[in-house]
Amino acid sequence: MNSLFRFPLCAALCLAARSFATPASEPPSQLDSAAPQAAQSQARRVILIGVDGLGARYIPWDEMPNLRALRDSGTYAVARCHRPTASAINWKSAFSGLPPEIHGYNLWNSTAPGIEPPDCALQPDGSLPDLVAEIRRQRPGAYTATLYTWAGLGFCLATNEASRTRHFAGVSSAYKGRDSAVFDEGLRQLSRNPLFMLLYQGQVDATGHATGWGSPQYTNACINVDANIGRLADGLRSLGLWDDTAIIFVADHGGLDKGHGGKEDIRVFEVPFLISGGAANGLVLRGPILLMDTAPTILALLGLDVPEKMRGRPAAMPR
Ligand SMILES: [Zn+2]
Image (cartoon, rainbow, N blue to C red; front, side, top):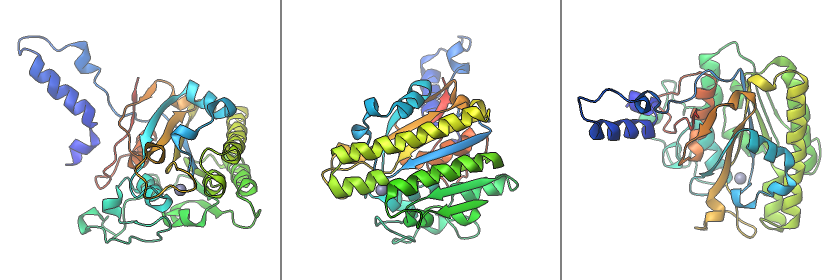
């Protein structure tokens, strides 16, 4: 089981197919040695931008020049989120590398498994696998930061294992101001040379619920997030950190009308999955990608091992 999950399934299938198609007397081809391998040791740091409620089909690319620049200089794929298509369920999948059927979060605001995870899914200490906890276990001296504006996120990720964690509750009554404060703090944290940093944005989801997915106000929320992305990119470049940073950009679900749960619609399921920054040079995303691939992808980008308990897989491969 271990070796199978550490090796990309598509690569395994490709090799298997070739082994059947190639006569035994024929020397190995270049294709065999070029079989895709998970990206390793590319990045000195990974910054994860998580935008709540940003459906891939709703991204106003023409009005998000900074995100578009990340896409055009990096690698982009449309991924799918998990059911039920709501926040805590999917953020837990992103951070644990597990599907909801295993981690057990079953409500938009779950703070613990509502369905008991199987014992075999648990780590020796009884916890579910977790991105930040795993980074700390493998790199105990590394600096990490988790910065977010929705309180529920703190129950989806082991924020207590991060060097610095902050829920921006009181900076502003509106998500727009608090989301900007997340990036302000993120830019300050760059001086600590974080190995991993999460920057969560809540305003797109909140606006979708208030005025509808794809509404003019929803687009404005996307534009606000884009401005924050631009400030981060400028900050990384001015500090000379761009070349060895990987930025990964994901969302937890899309939406339809003013909701996003319980509807079997492609606009709810499709979410962006993007990797950019200088450390993404030469990488390509290979689908199909599920949101639970987020944590394994980040660990692989950092050159860390993906725990056997995680069921997602690294999605980035050498081009
Ligand atoms: Zn959400």
